[in-house]
Length: 114
Length: 113
Image (cartoon, rainbow over all chains, first blue to last red; front, side, top):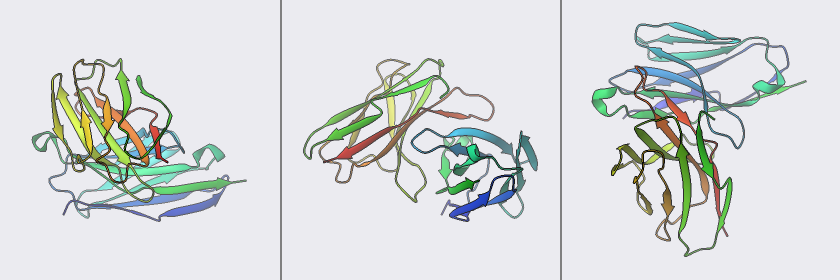
């Protein structure tokens, strides 16, 4: 069964600290993996997209890594800010030949406090 | 929110009523999608449309209907047959880039009274 599991479910950190969110998937075949940030009551916004051949990609203070062999990804947030408080969603795409089906994780809720 | 608008932002419905959620995009994207989001769960696909006048059921289509008469618009109707319609509804579109990235609208929160 195609699944995306994220951990932890929720996380509280102090402003300025770093954190790492985890994503494990069983989706096959694999096309690409995306991380989205979703503020409360808003639509998700893309942070990074990585294909099979990419093992790291950065977007400002956000750095995503991908290990396609172990089917694991992580999102590292450096020097967290209060505005980083949001849900972070890992999404895996099965590829164009499978209708670009997306499998969504349940998300990790991050709260950054001062 | 990437050129996708959804309205209304909040919607209240009495049991037994049908309601229609609006989704409009000005990105010239061919494909559009409707998702439902519930607390503690990943987004689930309701319906999608790859081209005008064509749409396909997603994983949880029962109790929902859609139309795609124009490229820019993909309205979702939540019918009285949907047993548990209270949720956050998200519309998305895809422009066919190499990553086939989906852009999401701001969402509509539907509450059944």
